[in-house]
Image (tube, protein in one colour):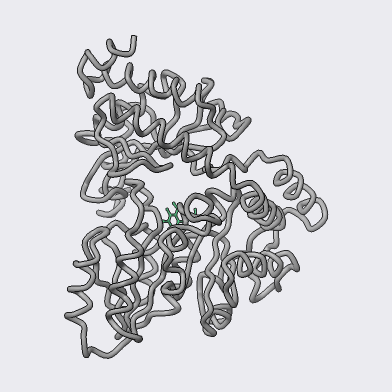
Length: 407
Ligand code: PMP
């Protein structure tokens, strides 16, 4: 039987990737035994390819809370909150997040992807304008598509580019909503929220700002509320979206806001209404993770010590990295083949990272996404640097001298 055109194109692209070694989309972990250790297809690996920034996935308090909730409430909810009802813990989680952000309300979604999809598509409709950073996460792009609003990209992290696009819209009807991120997921650079917020204020009262703090929650800000807190512009953010799948160590997403329409999302937002709600275990794990994140600010300090240490060492080796030290360290390679070769060589040496290729990456860049955790020991960071040096030399990304200087 013949393939349709689209299926054939997908198969061809996938075949190219597989021809170069392991298939990133089909990796099998035999075990994951801690935030930093796992067994990957028969080989022990140290994990540098998670978003486990605070190492909370194995925190005993979180694990017990999740296990207890599953025993008491069952393994799943088997439906959406709008159809099957909320469990008490969904509402408790929402109250706790709203209190953490000192906001009027919070709405929890089943994942962070669905939170962006659900909030953006419900807030904007045909005739409105969504102004999004060019490097936005797929969930933001997909939310825009689902909304039918006019989507306008501005240059990555460039407030002047945003200001120019807003100026062109002056006098046009429809809401204008700016969407930015606290830390960008591929290159690991922090959003310039202070400057973006200033542009928003300048543009007038019918312009709104949504900040996705997926990678910056628990990572930035005096209380871990993210980049808007660090930049002192929380009051300018009309909506904050986040996820429980990274620093919090569970699964789920949320939106907090002071605005009254937030509650209306529950009967208006399709990605809230038409999918099963967070399971009892993930809600309990998220609540416990949230509490741990707040009670243990030292985890954030440890994360940043590790992130700076690894970034500085990889930079000194000569790798092309993202623009600033960050728990997300992007090692940029010449092309997809080189990225996949380095990724395979690192796994052979017991080091697991994420390979990210176009179109998932900005500007057609091929990169390895190295994510740091508070749970890494300094010795693990130094070992990773040695492995990167050797693999980089072996596949010809680094000059021979890079390996020799560390021998
Ligand atoms: N926003 C950003 C910026 C992200 O990087 C991600 C996940 N990589 C998400 C949202 C979606 O989060 P989740 O994993 O909870 O779906």
